[in-house]
Image (cartoon, rainbow, N blue to C red; front, side, top):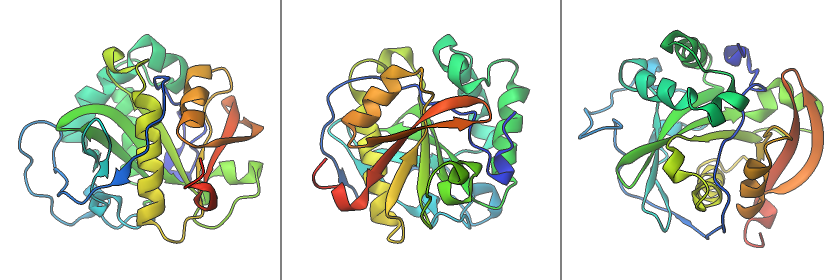
Length: 240
């Protein structure tokens, strides 16, 4: 199990669809507080990671995409564990995330982040009102990954799992990755780069990151995998 509380994010892999990237903007609608039905109001407190080290992911608001607004809703065990565990037990996800099995496997993974210092925020991606993806937004500069490349302060990493098989392979991966990367840059003025490190064997994921405006930087050896270091630069945001 990855020690996410101390910053070890190397186990996670991105399982996304491959398709044509579409330019997106950052929206301003109010974010839902639950991933199914009408949400209860969110209250301040560590359980929702409102005091994270990522400029309050819970308050970012949505990213606008051609498929509808995408909200990153910080995960809660009582509400989201069953759904995320089901997604992780899909064979395509299990091959890279290594979180298949009983719910306790995913629960441990989520608890490590929720009980940590806020350097990693697990989220459910709610697209146009439908929960359909799992995200981890994390401080790449505080992660062991930072020892593998010349990390800059406030470099921000992302992991993505598209949950439903039907949502993979039709272009959503690149679209959502671009949307969230641009949301990170919009909401974190101190962040100059968004970082990702998919497994080097996961060619659909790498292709989706390239579609989303990331560039391939290097191959890096992490504890659980050999990864492709992918970078989206603020300075190149309007060019790629």
